[in-house]
Image 1 (cartoon, rainbow, N blue to C red):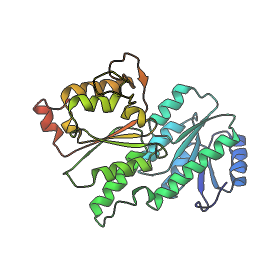
Image 2: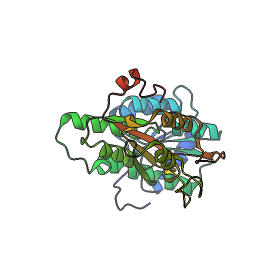
Image 3: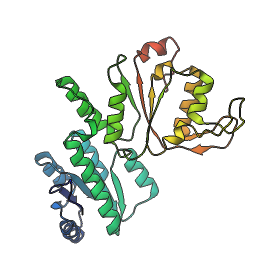
Amino acid sequence: MSQSNVVDPHVLLVDDDESLLRLMAIRLKGEGYNVQCAGGGKEALRLINTQNFDVVLSDLRMPGLDGLSLFEEIMGLGKDVPVILMTAHGTIQDAVEATQRGVFGFLTKPIDHVELRSLMEKAVSQSQGAQVGQWCEKIITRSMQMEQLLDQAYRVAKRDVSVLISGASGTGKELLASAIHKASKRAEKAFVVINCGALPENLLESEFFGHTKGSFTVAINEHKGLFREADGGTLFLDEIGDMPIPLQIKLLRALKEQTIRSIVSSKPIPIDARIISATHKNLHKEMEKDNFREDL
C-alpha cells in the first residue's frame, strides 16, 4: 500500500467469526494498517466511542448489532469514518441499499485481495484527507457557526442523498456544494453546475435532458444533457426556486424514475447523479404561492 500521504491508518475490523477475524487482521497488518479487532457490533461501538479510526471494516450479518445497524449507530454519533461492509451472502439489492444509506463500500466473501486493497486505500485517503480539511480548503472562515455548518455538510456528504442549500445571493452556496461533492464518494466524477434562472424554459429543458440533432430548429448538433454529463457525479442546481413549474414536474419524474428522455425521444436513458440544489428564496412561501412543488 502506498504510504505517500497516509500515516499509520487505524482500522477497526469487526466480525463474529473469530478465525476469519484473525485471518483478515493478519492480511491488513501485512498491508501496513494498524488493526484493532472487535468480535461483534456492540464491542465495536464501545471502541468507536473511545477511539478514532480511519476506516471501519465490518461483517454485514452478525448477531445482536449487525453491520448496517452498526453503521447507523456510527452516523448517529457524528463520527466521520468510512464504513466498508463484508458478507458471504451479498446480493445486488444489499449493496444498493447499503450504499444508498451512506456505506462507503461493499465486499463479497471470499474477499478479493486486489478489490480490498483498492477500497481500503480510497477509504483511508478520504478519511485522512477530510481530517486535514482538503475537501473544504477553498472555504475560509473563523466563524464557529460556519465551522458547525461545515461539520454538518461533511456528514451529509457521506450519505448519497439530495441536498438543499438556502442562503442569500453571494454567500458561497456553490462553494459549499462543491465541497460536499469533494467529500463524497462521487468526488472523482464530474461536478456540473447550472443556474436554473438564467435560461428560458425550453432551453433549460434541453440543457437538462439533452436533444438529438435536428430535434428543433437550432439543434444542429446532438447534446447529451447535463444529467448525462454528471453521470456518477453531482449535478448542482443553482437557484432552483426560479425553475418553471412544468420543468419541476419533469425533473421530479426523472429523479423518481432515475431515467431521462431527451427532447423528441421516447427512449429512457438511465441516470446516476447526486442532486445538490441552492436557492435564495424561501421555498415554503413559494409553495404557498404555488410557485414551487412541495414533492420536489
